[in-house]
Length: 423
Image (cartoon, rainbow, N blue to C red; front, side):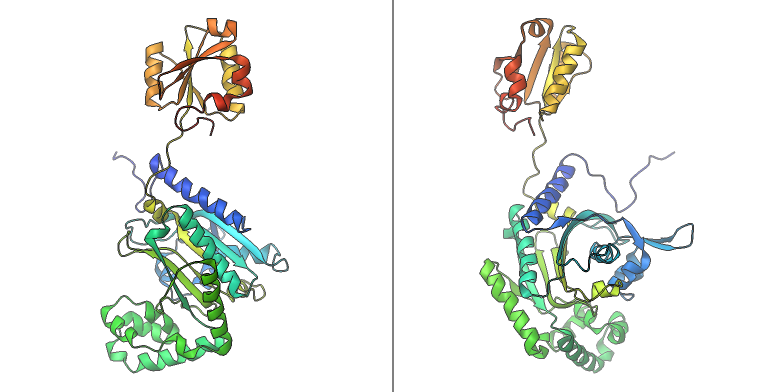
């Protein structure tokens, strides 16, 4: 029988990869808290219509990439391909549309059946932030500021550029859409097959086309800026003015669009050149009509999501592996006394391990391979006099530590060799 392998497009998170992943999520959770965002956790699968509504039947995700299945009752369920729709569904089903605004952070696995490539998997992980119930440009600017501070805290902001665009309000968007249909209809003979299909259903998605012939046409297509209503222009100006106030640099990119009708006003991406052609590491926008599509009232909302794997790849260095204090029994000391010390130290927050077997030499070799910060020697003599030998594995120095000192201030005792074991 051939060896069992991970399913294509999935990966195990172990060692350095896990530390990178956990660091991204931990930093994001902390920064989101500074902005007043609370964490929500939604189910890993939802009714299929949650995502078909939110992503649109014509999107590649819905038509080609969703992991959908019928359960034993014949109900169509889907492993979540993104987080925003589930958050909006949770807002409605938990009766929170009367308690706005809600500021939500989330983290967890998502699933899309797509071609695996650098930093992109079929099971991947996202962090995201949604600000539900705020219609002002300041809300958009705060969501972007949160993302910018996260990238700064991760040490990757210098490698990333914020690109920004506006989709205007409904009137602006309707006028722009009509102009795009008229423009592209005059060039049907030059459009790709995919863009021809999109022309009637979702013309804005033509602007995202990667086809070389389409790109030539897109370069001369009508621009959203030409159709902004006074209200939409005031929102756009207010957003940029607030970002300037936050000290956040940006580049206006008119090609950043969202094809579905509930998107409006702000759309943005943080992009990098360090990950090849798939350069977007964090993206978001305003979606004032999505909650209504979930059966709730119209709730103005702004949010973003970022791929954890891609952010982890941008980290210059992986977080250091945690270091332990290793207890090495000398001879055959009283087992109960050793176990009591072991648990007392753990209860004080010290990371402690004990060698299960072997001679003193073998246990010391094992402690070295574990990258222990300290070794605590416990023998009958040490237990009898209530004073223990502690070896600093970084400097090689040994010191005598009394039981009272060890139990009253263990973190300080073990905080003198590189990274503290009390973590």
